[in-house]
Length: 158
Image (cartoon, rainbow, N blue to C red):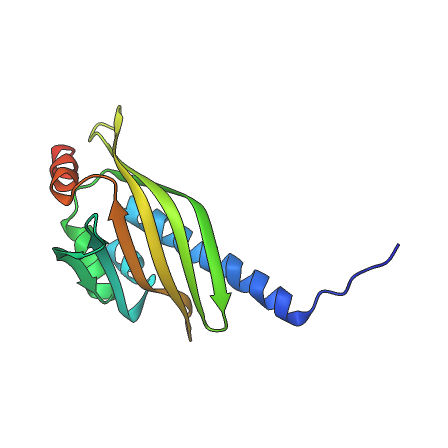
């Protein structure tokens, strides 16, 4: 039986991949927990969270620049969102990475006795290694329904 020595580069990529997956999970968990500061902290200081239309164009009023703007989005949102992400793929190139994932977004009723799916969609991400670890540099949100329907459905759960 032969043993294979794993090169340091492969180990580094695995460690980075796990750190980015943890970052993506923190984004989801802090949004679900309605924790604005922790949610904003998943972004770089110049990070961008944008929602785009079916043509990939940014939707006016749905581009957040910087962690504080991302945190403010959470503050403005009604309580009760539940997001589930899956199918995350990550490509790492040194201190930057790109990724894609699918999501399901729903709302819990205030009494927590019911739940409804609001939309599904995809994230396209750019990540950057910082002194604090990996952070989201840009997250582009593509919803499977229009933004008006999404906002209406969100507010109906409030």
